Image 1 (cartoon, rainbow, N blue to C red):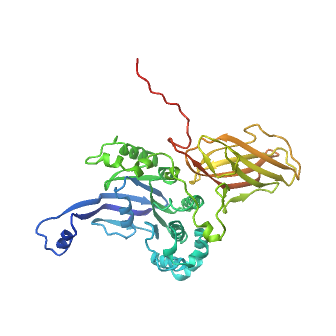
Image 2: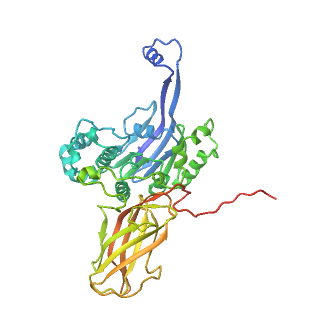
Image 3: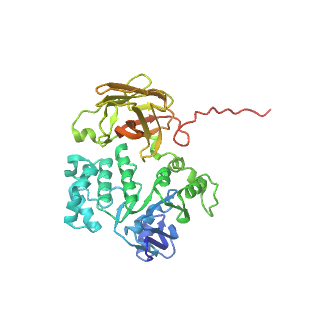
Length: 450
């Protein structure tokens, strides 16, 4: 294999025999079938591709296109019918939920089991155990049998093991859509860290936003055939043409593709999670606390906080159109963001700000008191200020993270007094989502031609 190549796939084919009846399969396996009683299905048909070291490559395609099959062959879970795969580097894979876990073992045992299967010694796993447990954040459940876990807890532990054993190559198959909004954001932050460290990442996703944001290159598969590879934008554009039957595909059944709700939803630019409400799991079980009232804003326990200490954001929350505190806002209604700030020393002209990000970390919108020309006065040490930002919710339905900040300029130098990143989760509830991040609130009219 050439230097600088982490994964090389050559002329890969994977075929399956499809039988109409179980008896036909038995006769064929025993050599008793007088004639061919099966149909051959090519999950992969002569696919070749390579992934460079340090490259992040996404694989996209419709259901049944062979995306998961090629990942399983690369990781050794499946054997190809023909062709070859070469891998240069230590692989950690997060494939379908539950792969590699023993349901009777507890979380700790499974951490060691998975680590050893990947090739690490017991001592090496022990050195990484604390970071794995911290990332998974499932509390005392780690000492309980895995079969008692919820799907959210399960994937938290599996993902924590996969990314904390310092792999050279990380392979992920649709594993980031499970778990609460804060855990998903944490996973995407880890992707960023891996990219900066020069790790090789290969992952399958229907979430075109994450493909576009994180991938250096994208590979498009369709019905087992490599349709193309190139920049994420190029491949996503072709993918969307495939979905609406505007791209020529010899022998393809476009109608069946369009009948798949999951596929049609994935064609939107927004995240797959935008159409459904993701609620945090297992917090109440883990802490033993009573369920929070629905109106209580959901705050992130892993908020990134920093600043020089000249001011402190003591309180922050959101109220809906009725003035009630809530982390759920109905699209199209007014809502208000509140901050309460106390100053520890004199500040000549503080700036109060907020920012909305999606769970992949993309900044969607935000503003501050200077831009709005709302407050440019000096404040004294000991003073407290209440700040509100009122606006109409035009963002698409989905999950968002809100950050807060108090900044200013001292001797022409931009200074951060206190900043809280990803501090609050806001769920936008919508029964009408358009394309992209926000709704233009268009008025559509159709009339007869006179």
